Image (cartoon, rainbow, N blue to C red; front, side, top):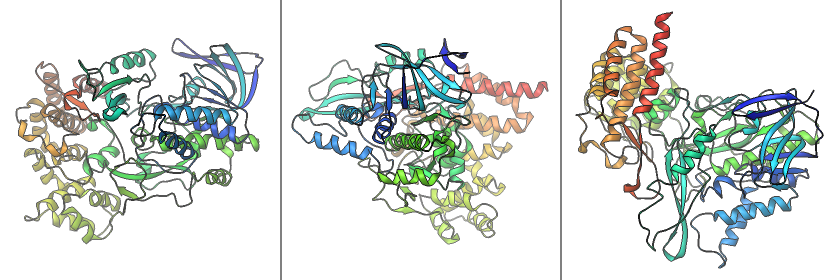
Length: 640
């Protein structure tokens, strides 16, 4: 018996139903954004009968209606390049105002034209309100348009809604945000302005956090973020005139499906990679959050201990990340791919999300033409289709690269980086202000590398080479070796704000690295210092802000938040291991949270170059939320 699954008043429910479908399609694409517009285009070009449903009034999503006109990394190849070439050609004509980056409205128009020309049936201002299923196979959709309610059957439904809304109604499993509090990355908002010489341009502002699963929160966030001081001024000049704000927010992270395959940052960094990539994602671990102390150990090892925020890497993405686990007739493309929170910061760039839409269309075509389950499509057949448009080359496995996105293009002009295995090469790198590659190379080699540990222990005893001494201690700390403890404690006692230069930006001061590592090693001797940091901010003054690191630490308030948040998590970890510290930690944190004069805040990134328009996010509530949840765990353990 067929069932209709619907979401009503926030709840998913089903009912057995006999329905007469109005139309049958090979493929229904839901959402015509970054991924969906290319899924619809490619499916129609392959000769499939395609229905395309979009809730807004145009195609392209973030890259058009959302105003994100440029690219930030991603891999080349695929049908999106054909579209970009058309847009660039039109932009060179005198009929349009000069535009900084890809002309967003032109791209939306070109996409609409190409999808319609390919033969897809497109409906704007339309929504899915139900999913028809036979057991765990999706067979069609109930949807509404300005013309009314429709029942349409399909062999394959491709969910490109951006938040896996069809997958949700079908009952698929999800993950959302980081493990400590479920928080995703900050979202951004884009403003279009008219600059000198009648040139249209834009800038973005990270505007806070959003619960994309909550309609009321989405509505509130749209309204509030469009009224930020970065957007609305008391007065505009002819040299910088506001054209419009955008309804479509720049959401960086949303729910991700639990797929037939999953890509995680830990697997990637431990070399557990698929041998059958459908496409590659390419970027750095572009986490826009300032509360890195609350991220996973894997992220903090990479971003804090090794300071490798700016190191780019290429991630092979298997087809199984598009297939909800245990389902057939349903695909998810775009930022809802089956990846974990940690690596989602890399696997989200527009080029790669456009490719995910093309991949979904190719999977649908093969499933329909071969009458096969999506999970059983032979990789060789998929690979042949991907190669047709230059979408996936046989040498797509790219090296690690330390890059600067000067024109936000691909990685072709950058020199590859290699992990180090030679002891002397590691020593040389640890002696410099760019030790990140060497620190991570030590982590990769591990304690089992016979000659490595004695060398590191020898280097921390040197009195002449201070960087070698400290960086070797950090490398040993990554391995959890006790020989690192005295030097790491010294960094905390001295409030060592030395900032390495391993990454192009977002490098982490030694003191935060030391606090993080000491917390992971459950070091009791550092606890008095941690409690002092938590209890008193008087050691912070204006001279302690590094002007070279302003994008991450903007002012003294933000600097103290970093001290507090890293010390907070480290103290909780040590108290987890040693009962004697639970009362001192609890009383200190509770007292500080009640202090009305304590400031805990971060600034959010923006590209406007206007420091007076910085958006500040209060973080005391976040600390309180995490603390209360942690205390509940202690109470639960005590009661048992």
